[in-house]
Image 1 (cartoon, rainbow, N blue to C red):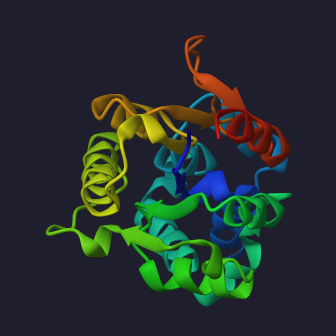
Image 2 (spheres, rainbow, N blue to C red):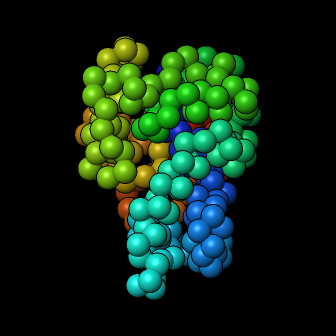
Image 3 (cartoon, rainbow, N blue to C red):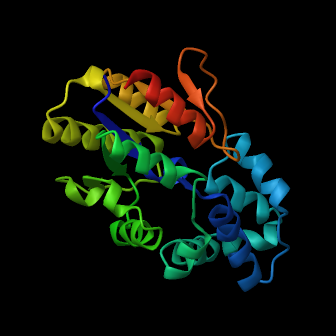
Length: 229
């Protein structure tokens, strides 16, 4: 019987595809560079390219390479701004799922490696879903703060957050489902032997693993959870 659902935030609970696209288009506009198409950005993301690799492709000419640091500065400034909140979208049917889980008395908590805790909390408030989470766990709640741009660091953050959640929630691990969208989420779940559901994102590279439970929408996620609750 499932008693606790742990939701990852970025690109699991949210759809950040428009946010991601704008994070490249806005610096291009400010630096008067040729803008990549949405199709091109999605193609690169689906092939596993990181943001820094995409920026280098945009600045493909030698005469433009000196703009790299400025491009990254503008991009990070946008991602940390209030404006970026307008481009973050709640996954379709997420609120309906959270409401049903609350009715079923299944506890939901949020786990996020996002370095901007206040922005995440603001997103929850704007979308009126904060009430569905008994607790939110952030990197700020840990005893350390590290750069979350590397895969190795993100795995460490995710493991540390899961450790804190397991310790606080007092629920048997076989009564927990961790819902995430990345290899880092999967590695963290496997480390603690937590049941894991992989939420396939439509614009990021998919995990090629036939052994994991997968879904690509909240309606199917609800079915998976209800079967085990």
